[in-house]
Image 1 (tube, one colour):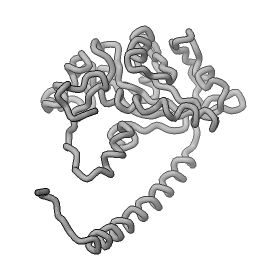
Image 2 (tube, rainbow, N blue to C red):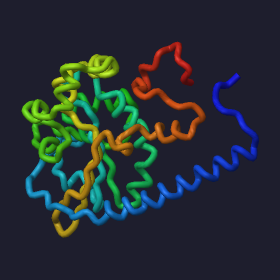
Image 3 (spheres, one colour):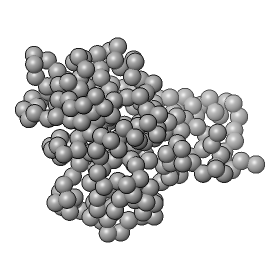
Length: 250
């Protein structure tokens, strides 16, 4: 017997209608936020950056691949990570390939950044079966300039980071082992999205959003929000080729 409340169809319909009112209010609020996001001022990118890609060295402008908009996710995969990228970031990246064609046809180039050297990114991309362009910011100031990573000094100045390093919860200790990096190194990488626009020969920084914003989460978590059972508060993230053999996944 289920421990969840069981009711009549009429009771379900009344409760569903009440929830629909809240969902409608949230949708309206989301539209307001979307408009505010579009109204953010754009900032010229003055510094010249050169990145390592699978096709060789490319500038920020060249990463647009001829389009006017560039959207990038920064995967937590630092130079000190010995075992690969963050499993949570990996889960998010697993859902990106399906949108590539649709974004490209809407004047948007989608890529991912990480600070590990390009050879390691390419190998990891091959392991995960990803198709999106994966770009290394190794040996550049790009990630630090745009708040996608912290220097050692910056990390020490943030109380929340210091606390996690000094007294990590069990799940974070497990995460440290998964990526193969000490927490003082691993937590300096920032999971987040960053957007740029190109026009009149100029590149503009337009938007950044970092965890714990809900947008910086694997896309399947939105599906889990519509399933009947509540998920654990701190669910363990697994890379798709590392799930336990005795799990319930198929």
